[in-house]
Length: 154
Image (cartoon, rainbow, N blue to C red; front, side, top):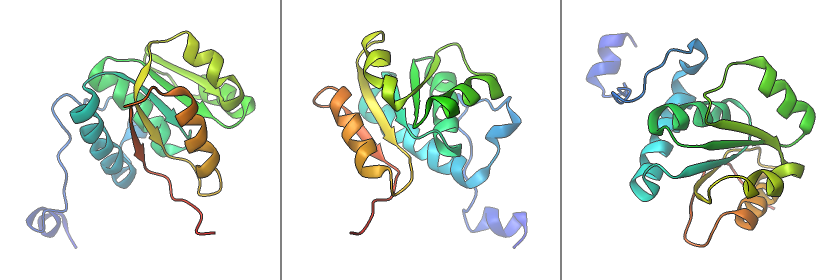
């Protein structure tokens, strides 16, 4: 398939005009498409509320950077370990409105920011049940959670 076939088949997704991509790490097409779709759904429900992201892989990183860039709102990226959270803090530049913490610091981190009305669960299948539980512990009733994670079948 060449680019003309992709365009004709409507397989191309145009980035919204409010999504500038100055960072080369944001050009991964499939996860970027998933994150942009999630942002669209969350913005419909929550406008530009603060966003809580449980999962700090490619999708979580993109979500944090794009939410902060596209909405100007606060995003908190939650990693499973402090070691990984520290690596994330030091490995790339982050918008000023993005914070990174580990799951052990989640309650403390949430107490110092506005209530989250939007959240994304984008972790491994193995971590999904615990990750969803941690989100439900800290987001207010009526918050919107996008479940991008798979869940174990057993």
